[in-house]
Image (cartoon, rainbow, N blue to C red; front, side):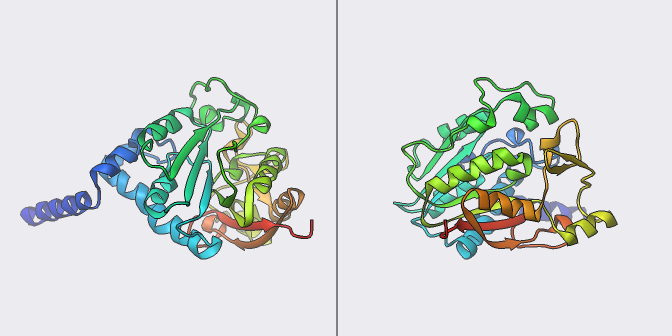
Length: 289
């Protein structure tokens, strides 16, 4: 019996190794850099690599194909790219003139990715560090703030080398921002979209059903406080989680010159989509403006 269990473990490890290439080990950061992963001691680096690339390759790419018209020649901007999982997938998916641009506020992560992807022409990474007031990660993990920072409303996401973009994607970014900064960000997005382009962004949107689920205590979090219009569970560090009434979210897009095309509700408040626990919103430029 023990021998059978050992053989199963060996087979599982062999199958895991077969799915991971040496290039994967060069392009995917060490699990110790991932502040969002949870208890990294419970998984090996190979298990982490497989989970890292599977989500982007098998979930995000198909979702963007279906809902945002992603093609192999698309230009895509990843706002809040973190440790570059979507960049990894795009490096395998995109063909010239397709190109991926990742942006994040974590300098250490981006410098690691810039070095790893320096010979992959379709994948680019850039960063700008933000001041301590907006660095909810440093506050939550009691880490020292970053250097050479700017207030969030002074960050410019795009430079002249970035072409008009077909898709601007972010996941769990607006869930850590206040309204004025969100609207300023959306206005920058509006100016950079190519004709026919769209935004795909995730949110925690509170509609009547979400309110009901929150009252039942069946949402995946509580949101007892309101800070600068955002619902949050932390008064000390409100940007660790910001949710908004659905009408407010639609208003943010309207102020920035967008029309909301589609909303896919997430499982955080008892529903679900094929991508994430958060709500997914797809928006296009408002042609009436």
